[in-house]
Length: 334
Ligand SMILES: NC(=O)C1=CN([C@@H]2O[C@H](COP(=O)(O)OP(=O)(O)OC[C@H]3O[C@@H](n4cnc5c(N)ncnc54)[C@H](O)[C@@H]3O)[C@@H](O)[C@H]2O)C=CC1
Ligand SMILES: O=C([O-])CC(=O)C(=O)O
Image 1 (tube, rainbow, N blue to C red):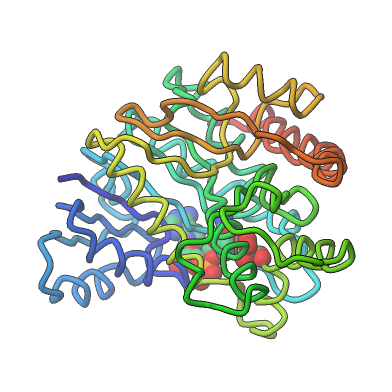
Image 2 (cartoon, helix red, strand yellow):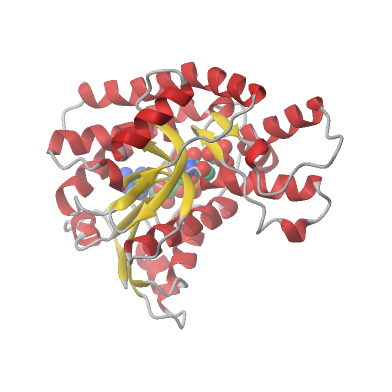
């Protein structure tokens, strides 16, 4: 039984994510931290008849430190979401500082916890957490994860739609690699558990790829100024957190993509860099989870020519996003 902490717990993602964690039998303690409203969210969730003990925290009286004490897993959906016309990188101005300060708190109060970063732009916020942990001398690449599960969830759903049978969605598995924004999102449909229908055209494949890459925009547009994906993200975040919790407890064979520092598994990471064909520090790759966090990083597998071109297109954007996060901490006072 574990202690889970949600930072940004009163938000659009934070609330449904906390609900799902309250319902996870592996969670014994659930600490909810936000700059507003966590006492109410915690009181509400605490009436649910599941074992997890819920407590809300606010910034006064060392709330962050108290929320984090003894944490096994810390999930961060704190920060502003997009409005129509914005890119995820446009969120950097506000969210970089929020994530830096929260990472500072984690590095001090719970340096051994698994940290799951949802706040956008993930391609930059994960490097921010890593650089803060390095400055504190507590960086362990096996424990810091960018949550890209929503891309995997979307790819599974959209493939089942193409196959004309939504009941397949839970069992369709599509590896999605790269990063978490636009062209950095690379679905590998050639390795999906379910093949696309016979005669599926190149232009249909391109359209399906684009739908996964820009699935977030679909929701931002539909919400029309009221934010971005929250419910599907809560589902995806809870699913990834559940896998991490199960692996920390010793369950084997749990493999799922996540955006990680490639030194989390030195040999595996070097092999992946060769597959990518470029020197890059981070990539979302299929991660085998284990009791220490990352157990191994798995090969990108047999990538076809089209997928190679998608990876080649992803790398320049991704490298720029990574550098931006690293430079931000280099020039920040902690
Ligand atoms: N990784 C992914 O696949 C996805 C990431 N996101 C990202 O998740 C983030 C949150 O999205 P929403 O929940 O929709 O936003 P929201 O605005 O509804 O909630 C954000 C919460 O963060 C809190 N917050 C702000 N500063 C804080 C601080 N310093 N400490 C603690 N809490 C703080 C706010 O009070 C608010 O409750 C956004 O950056 C969004 O882009 C959204 C969807 C998918
Ligand atoms: O699109 C956004 O801004 C939120 C997000 O990351 C997603 O839905 O994938």
